[in-house]
Amino acid sequence: MAIHSLRVVAATAKVYFTITWRFSSLSGFALRFFAPIMTLGAAWVLYNQVYGGAETLSPEFVNAAGNVSYLSFVTIGNAFYVFVFAAAFVVGRVMFWDRAMGTLEATFITPMSRLAYMAGVMVAAAANSMIDLAAVFVIGLLFGFQVSSFNAPLFFSALALTALALFGIGLIVNAVTLSFRDRVNTANTLMILFMVFCGIVCPVELMPSWAQTVSTFLPLTYGIRLMRVSLLGTEAVDVAGNLVALFVLGAVYIGVGIVTLRLIERNLRKKALFSVF
Amino acid sequence: MFLRVVFAEMEKIFKLHFFSFRVLFWTLALPLGNGLYLYFLYLPFAAKSVDLEFYASPFTLNLAGFTLIGQLLYSFFTIMLIAGADFEREREQGTIEAVLLSPANRIAVLLGEALAHALNYVWLLIGILLSWVFVLNVNVYVTDFLALVLSIALSYLSLVALGMCFEALFVASRRGGMYATALQEPIMFLSGLIFPIQSMPRALLPFSYLLPLTFGLISVRLTLLGGASIFDVAVPLAALAFMVVVFFVSATWFIRHAERDAKKKATLAQF
Image (cartoon, rainbow over all chains, first blue to last red; front, top):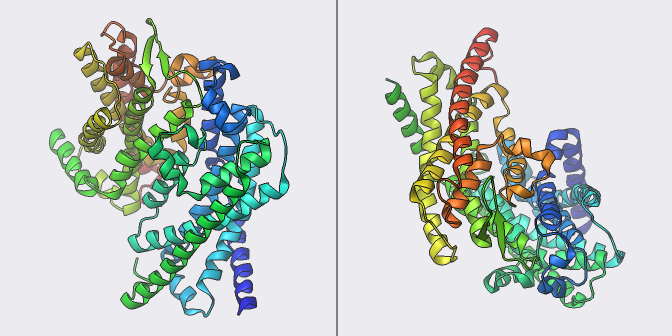
């Protein structure tokens, strides 16, 4: 059973990887970087033109972020956001597109594990997202991004755990987009939630208390924090605590995601909604 | 006849979009989310205010007001971008030939669509503004109501005219949706939405001055948050008035050109 599921994961990942690169377009690829380039550009203007350098940063920022460069701080947040964007959106729309293309019925007729199928998509999406992540780091170099240390085990652990949490979120979004036939608004609203509350452009500690409460329930908050530690060597962060929090939240989201996956399959079968579009 | 076409188009758009998830997202979730994001972008800095100046003495504006009010106007701009993609949808639905076969004035069709999207936003805009003032304590400081009314009205009209231009351009492109998406971030950056326009790198300023949003943001922020008088915002208001005329004339030319070209090449219904 486990080997069969692994074969499903590998086959699905191969299919999605092939689809992504066979139908890739330069404009589509470039569009994915507009938001981070804009944020990096805006951060550069704020830092250099509007306020004028490191001495204009608040003491609260220095305490919360550690003695790190503001532009490096923002670059890492944005690189991580691009990773999230690329990974979560793909998994969140898998069955919506399957239904739109008329392949959902065939997919569900096969005896394969649905979870393995979705995991295969996530593997392909995460692999593609790594390219985006690397690209934003390269773009960040133009805006003043500097890596002061590189803790490889922590970096890849943070990425892997975040990808797991994203998989859970993707499963939930997949259920919502399929059930409500809403490809755009649910995913976009979620992305705004991540963008605003995960500490992409400022440490969570500087946000209002209500925003900090929201951020504690988002796994990406911990993922971004760990990635900053791994690349900038920040000392003021409890690494073990953040790793545990990321793992627990990831497990919770995956658990909820699996339940929603089963529920939508039952609902589709009961109401014969496989090919209704 | 012209007005009847305008009203008919408006009725159609209202029926399609008056209250939908799409409208809720673009008018509620997006401005609040983006506004907070930009506000948080400023939090690492010690200063909690922004100086804004444009051919007048600088005004010091509250940070929350600067970012959130800017977002309201930007969301309106986004609505007009999406309105631009709407006319192209007629082709996707297979109804564009019928629309163009009718004796309806093309400008009336574009105006009706743009006005409907704009009006659809206004009722939400007022609610959002009031809720931000009372719930998020965005400080409003108005000393010259005429300047404020003119700023809002001219921003509104220039964006409606620009929306008409987008409609006429996008229908010929077949990629309206993609252009509408692709233009959002560059315009956010160039318009001075995120930071005061005087801090824009000089090489990019000419592009900023092509956007009505740039002048709309300056005049609305200064009159609504900084207590600026009509004399303080005379230059951006004049620029906005000029743009209303230019975009309206351009939209007329673009739609005629698109129709003539499509008829000549028989590409109207091809998708």
